[in-house]
Length: 306
Image (cartoon, rainbow, N blue to C red; front, top):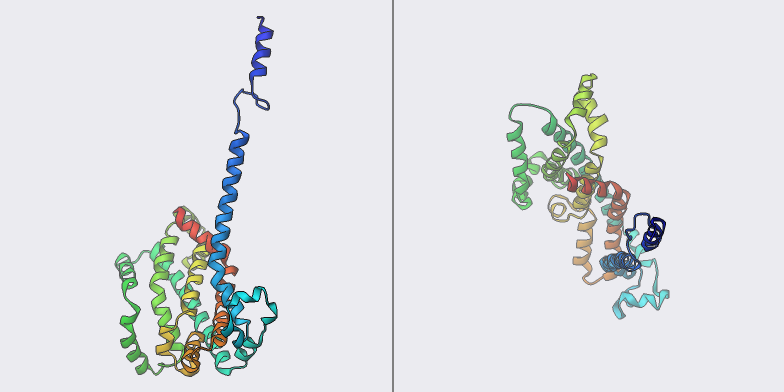
């Protein structure tokens, strides 16, 4: 066999579409990969639907009348959409107690979240990059406060707020949430800020930047995901809290969670009021979460990779 014939035989023995004779993934392999990807998506979709099922049930229950709720389950709306009505929400929003408590929830949650984020960010930067005597010991003290149960401080803080004359007001609820939110905020942000490259901060200092300029122009943009994650967590904790507000807030400054609890005690099994009120209290946290979802995911991924 000549050299030309040998080369032609070797060329014909190679797999089609390859230049080196090595075969790529076969059709069966590609099909298995596509099937695995489709199965994963299907499983995740089913898990998400199962997770959202109680929320969907609560929404549909809040859109049904009291008689329909007593006679059948919320799933009957799928075959009888005429049951849907906004009457429950109309009655709920016409109640001055509910509307006032909804406003109180905002007046409590927004300041408590902003104060924790701002103070926690400043303290986290100081503990991460500012040298001062006893810094490590003070940080250990802050970390130790994480293990203090909230219930332990209820009685002494109640006495303190009574002496200060702020017991029963919105200010007392905000201060309590800020005090117990700061240890976690400082711990989280200090660890995140400490991962910022030192060379970046030193270069800015050589250019004449002060600590405040460094914090605002360098640290905050780089720590945006962690700050957003902290803001989401703090907002959800404060908005959904009932114990602290039940103790420190009087009826005129009670948030929505306390107002719904009092509706339960007052009317018993009024599921139409409770379902619409519970879904109303769920709307704001959902909006906040989805608004900052990208930053939250980036913060979680950044913490996982470091």
